[in-house]
Amino acid sequence: MGLYEKIKILADAKKISIRRLEELLGYGNGTIRRWEKQTPGVDKIQRVADFFDVSVDYLLGRTDKKHYYDLTDKDERDITKELEIMIADLKSTGALAYSKETAEVDEQTHELLIASLENSLRIAKIEAKKRFTPKKYRN
Image 1 (cartoon, rainbow, N blue to C red):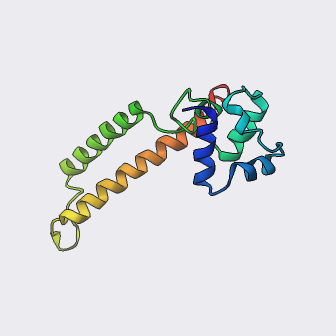
Image 2 (cartoon, rainbow, N blue to C red):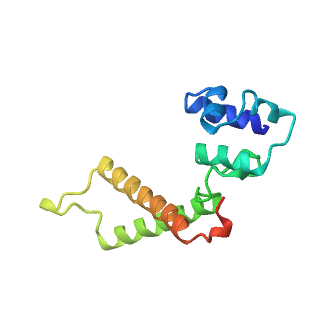
């Protein structure tokens, strides 16, 4: 998929036309359309990337990650491992048992707890990437 097609998809997702995008960025009519056959300057690509809050590498097709902080397959595997360890620890200490009247946690509550833990791990991983990724590796 080329640069123009990526921009078209992003524009469609924001419900704006390519012409409107060109107006917002101060480009002449048909400028972005010409990018199908011509290579634009880096400054122009950067302005489009900033507008859509994606990386230049994503626009150019070098990566499928829209942002430098998106989770990779390795991150997903790490989250799965950490979640398994957390669940095992909670089960071994009896922390998954319901404390009121010593009733067991029902299956739905158990699944919601696991989903919440997984979501928390994802958020923590993304925030760590945002905070600790050196600037030279961002976008």
